[in-house]
Image (cartoon, rainbow, N blue to C red; front, side, top):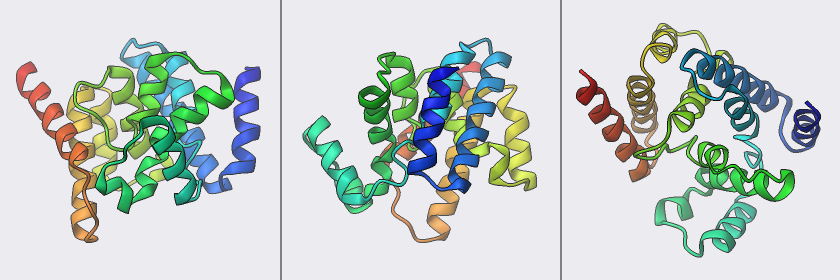
Length: 193
């Protein structure tokens, strides 16, 4: 519990109050989904709490930290540095809070664009980020929330499609990994049926 308090204190200084409420909503939904799907709920809650550590970092800082860690940055992220906040949040979790658990770091890293072959823990954080209650109560979101307790991969697919529709409607750039994640989840659903 002491670690959680440290993280929340850090977040209070580094994100808006609105964002903090979202983060706490993600943490709670991650824990609930993990318990339901019999996945380590402590890891899920921790990844949920830490998923947006770098959300308010300025683009130059996101670019600098990513370049230092990975040496190269793809063209979509170069022109949309906010997409790097997931990777940088994992770096902050490791370097500031001493998180060494690969599953937790991967779940933080994958929460925005997803990743083909991501773990169930990563799926949970990806889903919770999009569907936690502070995101609204539209019929579409409510339906996806219900599906999330039945089928993680189906929910990843639906979450990707929901995001892709938004990006297309608003004339935004789509990262190829978002499409690869959607296709991977769709394939997983088809294989199970």
